[in-house]
Structures are given as structure tokens and as C-alpha cells.
Length: 195
Picture 1 (cartoon, rainbow, N blue to C red):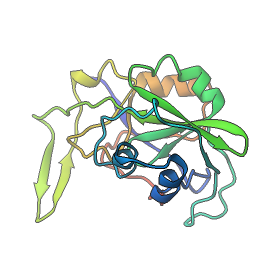
Picture 2: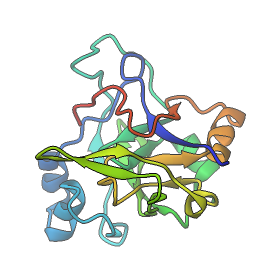
Picture 3: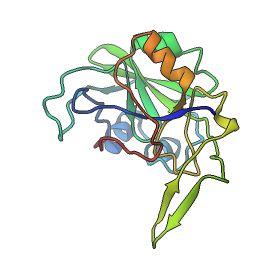
Picture 4: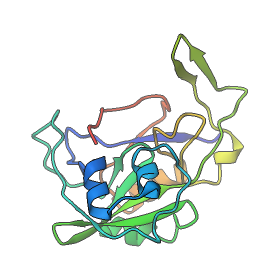
């Protein structure tokens, strides 16, 4: 049986990119395509044709102001990730079919938002919602559809997380990529981020 992981960043150790809606909208002179992406309402939009490098910085989370490390890869806004130049060079070709890389200008260095566009439905015989007035995912299990994917999200789950395969985890370890935690508990939100 394949093992899948929900990705997290330990914000008690690693700084994060605090980009918000207003910053992106202002820098890109936003139109509806950008706002769909920022508000996470429409998750199937490619933005690379009209994206220009957005200026930002790494900062400690307000919850953990003592975080000092800059991650090689980190979580950003739901199912998206932030890649350093080195991580981008390693994974750029491997992840080309799963989404797009959007450049960021971080104090003169290039980082990339990975806009995750690969959606995988869970194994519906083992996944379900609990409805107690508010829809809540109570069980999430991925099956054969996810086996061949390095990174993916789930529209069924609400695109609130980035998931990966064992292969992606092993590649991160092989290339000594810092910043990600790999949880086999697919419903565990990890540390809350304020992005």
C-alpha cells in the first residue's frame, strides 16, 4: 500500500513568506484571474503568462517570532509551496506537469511560488465528510490515482493542503532540502500559518 503525506512547515524554526491579498493585488495590478488565485476560489488557473516577480521577504510568524531559518521549500497558502533557487533548480523539470512556478523577488534573490494544479480525488470507499452543521472532512485516504504523483492537492478536501508521495519525500532527503515536515496524518493541519 502506498504512503502519502501532508506537507507542513515548522514555523517555530523556519520563517515564512507573509504575502497577502492586498500586496499581490497591488504589485500585479490585479484582475479577476489573480484574485481567483489569491482568494483560493478557483484553483485551476495558470498565472505564468501574466505574472511578474512579486517583491516580498521572509519573516518569522507572529506566533513564533524567534524563527530564524530560511527554508528551501515551505508551505504557502493552502496547496501552494515556496521554492528556493536551489530547490527550484532540482525540482523544476520533475514538477513541470504538476503546476507552475511563479517568481518572487526576495531581497534580490529569486524564489518561486509553486502553483499546485494537480488535483487527485480520494479513495471514496475510505474517505467521507462529517456534517455537523459545517462540512468537515472526517477521513481522507488516497488510492491508486495518487501513486504516480509527486505533489498534488485535493479539491474534494478543499485544496487546503499540499500532499506528496514517498518518492517526493525521498528526493527531499536525498537533496538535503530543508523546510518541510511530512505527516502521514492527512487531516493534521500542523502549525497554523498566518499567510
